[in-house]
Image (cartoon, rainbow, N blue to C red):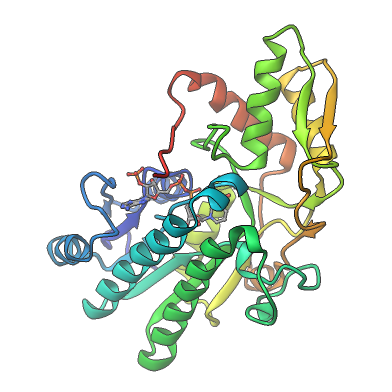
Length: 318
Ligand SMILES: NC(=O)c1ccc[n+]([C@@H]2O[C@H](COP(=O)([O-])OP(=O)(O)OC[C@H]3O[C@@H](n4cnc5c(N)ncnc54)[C@H](OP(=O)(O)O)[C@@H]3O)[C@@H](O)[C@H]2O)c1
């Protein structure tokens, strides 16, 4: 049992995942949570991170801070995606190691796996082939984070563990069309088209690729599961283990939003990998499983979108 008074620092606690982890821990009675915005502590600045960790002395660190974005953002800002993600995680991991933090949970992404790896993606496929070129910058940073945690685990027998989420969505998502992921981008497009006399919605690609989506509260539950249990291995996939076509995703969102216009598939735009599904049997074997089904999660996300429509995150990648 993790002590409910343990000091837990959630790096990135204002983000979609970090805020869900915060809510989950608070609801379970954890009373000593710590967070700092990027304005208060720039995690790319090693001195600032060392000072913050030395002053706050967390017992546990959850690293949910990162530069996150869709294909466009990854493609346009490769330097920032590689450099800033490495800086953030290196500074946190090193400070955690040197101050003897008892547990460190690192969040990566399914894009760490090779582009042409067999499906569903097993943890063992890491570093067996080339990455998807459009997001290799982000993926390389995340792989080095996984490996740093594994090195600390092996060499110093510390409880540093990495969780690789599939595509996440939910409350506090990013709805900025220049940098958002596919699911929140669709919610926004269908919503705006509905209010524009049900105009046609143009979506990228053929709609045939298959993708997996996990509601962010389920991700938070997986992180808290990793916090409360000593996981025996260094790397775990977190997802639903279920996928659907982008076309089916679009019609599901269209129905929930209430758009009645046409959907146009712009197949001059790239499709990306035909299928991307996580093998989540390792987490299932330990006792964690997702709870929120896709339609319910999309409805919750759309409700949050409507409540927060005036203040969406706008991310400046420069
Ligand atoms: N979203 C997904 O679909 C998805 C999928 C797989 C994995 N993940 C992983 O899950 C984690 C969280 O993602 P998310 O979707 O929650 O992202 P997010 O909503 O963009 O939140 C990221 C957080 O990181 C913080 N941050 C970024 N740069 C920082 C810096 N230099 N100094 C301090 N804080 C900084 C931001 O803090 P401020 O708000 O204070 O600026 C922000 O709150 C990431 O590791 C990501 O790779 C996400």
